[in-house]
Length: 319
Image 1 (tube, one colour):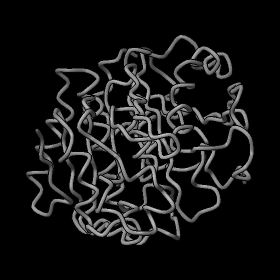
Image 2 (cartoon, rainbow, N blue to C red):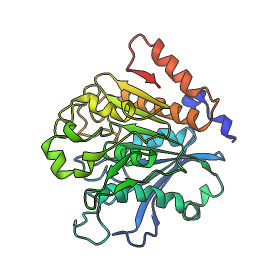
Image 3 (tube, rainbow, N blue to C red):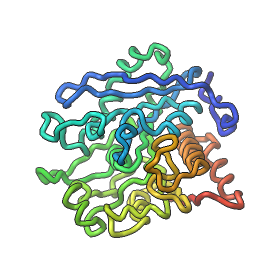
C-alpha cells in the first residue's frame, strides 16, 4: 500500500491494527529500561510515525503505554505507526523519587522520545511485521496534559532548569510536526501556588522558540483550577505565544479529558463524549497527514467539514 492510499476518504474503511507491547529498549542510566507499545496498520509501507506521550491523571494504568487507545487505534488504523512509552512518572512503575536515574521527569520524558528515535532499528527487530515499513523522515509527536508539555519541549519550547538555572533546549529536529492536547500554558503569575511549588519547571515555560508546526487542542471548559489562575484559555498559550505556523482547535464544552481520549470508558473523564473523542482523533490525524505530506487535502477537508456542520464541536484558527 503506498503512502497516498491513506487520505481523508479512509475513515469508512480503517485498516486492521497490529499492537505489540511491551517492546523493551535498553536505557543505560535510566532508572529502568524504556518500555513502549507499538501500534501499526497490518498493511502499508513508508508509514509515518507518531510518538505519543501520556499524561499523569488519577488512573493507575492509563498513564503508561497502555493508555490513549481511542487515539492510538484510530491513528494506526489510518496509516500511522504509533509508539507510546511508559515515562518514569507513570504510576505503573511505582518508582521511589530517590531512585538513581529517576528524576527530573520533565527532562526524562523528552529524552524517552529521543531514545525511541535513536532505537527504531531495535523496535523493527522486536516487531518483525514492521521491518522496513517506517518512513523515518515523517515523524510527529503528540501528548496530552503533561504529555503536551513533553511534546512542546520537543517542538522547541524552552524552560530554565530549576535545579541549576540553565536554559534547557530539548528541541528534536527529527520531529516535523506536533499535536498538543490540553497542554500546560505559560508560567509566572499564571500558575497557582500549588503548581509553582510542586511543578517549578512550569514557572519559566517559554513558547517563543517553539517553531515546529503544531496543532494545539484546548477545551473551552478546561478550568484546571489547581494548576492555573487563568482559566481555560491558559491551555491556548502554546498557540498564542509561539510563532507560526500553528493551528488552534477549540472544543466547545470540553474539559481536560477532551471527551475521554485517555481510554475507553474512563471513569475519571468529567466530560465523556464519544463524538468529541472521534472528532479529536479525526482532526488531529488530518492535521498531521497534511503537515507531513504537503499538498494532501486531509486538513482542509476536515476544516471545511467542521465549518459546514450546523452544530460544530469546535472551531479552528490558524496563523
